[in-house]
Image 1 (cartoon, helix red, strand yellow):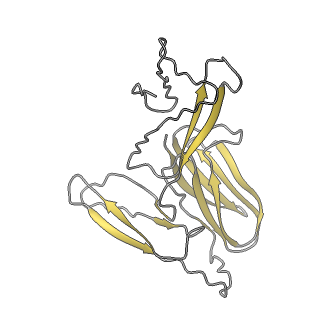
Image 2 (tube, one colour):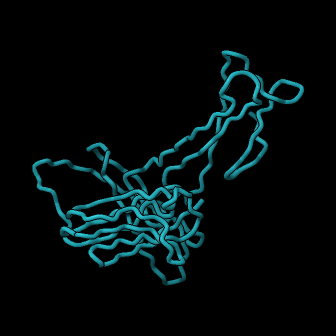
Image 3 (cartoon, helix red, strand yellow):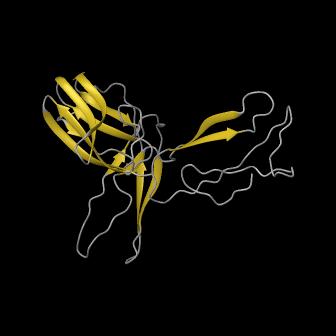
Length: 236
């Protein structure tokens, strides 16, 4: 395939083949392949899903159109930051929250570097090591208080994980997503819950299954009437 320079969502690329009409031709039993190069901004975090459609000219046997998706998984799934960029005035400070997720990772040493760069001073590199240890003899550690943690990744696209903790049995627990206007976008949970640590995935869609636009959203955890709120940022 010959790329015509189009980028962004909804990019359309023609296959320039060997015919006089510049069409690609596949005869019965033949196979064609395409190579896709993806460049991500340094501010991007999270898995990337690329939907594609391959359409033919309608001649020959079905199928004439093939739909599918390519999922590029974020390589460092056990660590994420609550922010990837920002601005600081002279003398100002900013706390950066580091989230760790040890689910589905091996019990061995994991390492990475957090690199902080700036246009006004030399960059800083912070080495991070994580060694998860599984001890089946320890009783489950129940949370000491109710807590809605920061979602990760944040900013995110197309989905994000929202962790929260419940310290005592609750008759009414809800986790909902609202937009800046205070309108309900998605109900992720609405039921009684036992004590424990939980995490739910918001796929960036509303209750009707429609993808939401880029912008600021709020996760709202209500435990027997007591509410906790966090800000989330969707980017596309």
